[in-house]
Amino acid sequence: MGHVTYYPITSDRLVGKLRKYHMQIIILFYGTILAIIGLSIYGFFNPTVFQFSFYYHLFIMSFIIYFTYKPPLPHNYKQDTSKQLSYELEDDALVISFQQKEKNRIPYTSINEVEKFSKRLTKIKSINPVGKHFWMTQGNMVGFSDEHNALFVYSTSISRGLLLHRKFEKIIITPEKEDDFIRNLEDKINETKPYSNTR
Image (cartoon, rainbow, N blue to C red; front, side, top):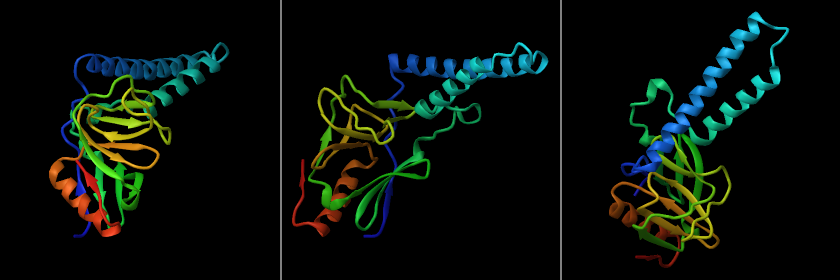
């Protein structure tokens, strides 16, 4: 079997309070952008009283909001961007990519167990909503929840999906065609070590 690419399941991120939170992030982001534009115009006509430090802090704030939460831009707000996340079964590793950039490469030899889960994570830390569809751990930081001590998350749901158990952490992914993905992942694992444990 050659390389096989899977995309995530339909997102359930914008449900209930999370939808309201998402809209608040969008309003905050675009409010900050409008404030920057307004200050730029004001500073152009009133250079002697222009407060650069305030302008600088607004710019940094908008930068942090965008790269932390990835609020959708106007031209792609209604587009289905869920395929920006992918899981590719390569010859020696599972490669997780987001927006065509590799986020994590997981050697099959490091996967001890593959487990389905269907219970929502609670009290998550260092696991952020990203855009309209995704949940991601922050950069290279390790995430936490009441259920798990060390997590890396690359998913469209924190209520269902797969847990990949490794020696020191677990990885949450949400591939479509879940049973087919597990079967192909098992085949890859079996090629690199004597057995795998899947439940």
